Image: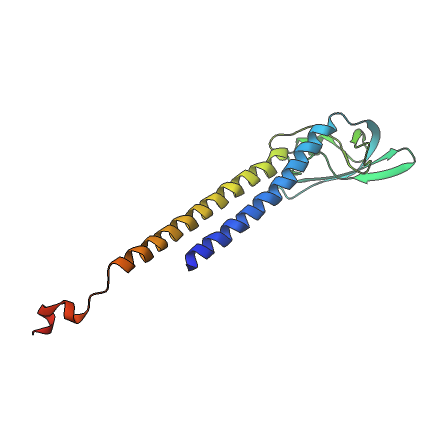
Length: 172
């Protein structure tokens, strides 16, 4: 039964990861879609820093004002903040930009609204993969459990032979 427990624990771990990735990914998809209809204001790039070249990450900070409230955001889009360098070249320090902000929460803003492939879809894809892995672990646990139960059921019908059941061994 140890392997069944092991596979079940791994399945639960993968299922938890799928739930977390699905929640994050679903939120990115929802906000990305909604951002296409958000109001805009003018903003200004505070800084652009490329991440390590191996990751192709980008770090952008921009400021904008909604009503009397001055805000700062670091979100270019909804999804992972990596790019092939195009976004890095597109923005420069001090540049004026159009900022899309959530009217219900003005602190939530992006420079590029909508859904971006593959950045926005990485989290949901990870959730789908983690769900598939959890199903594999649960299938392995079920198969191990069934083989254990079949072995237990078959062993009660086949009694263990004793020395008296084998006369040819006892006569020598």
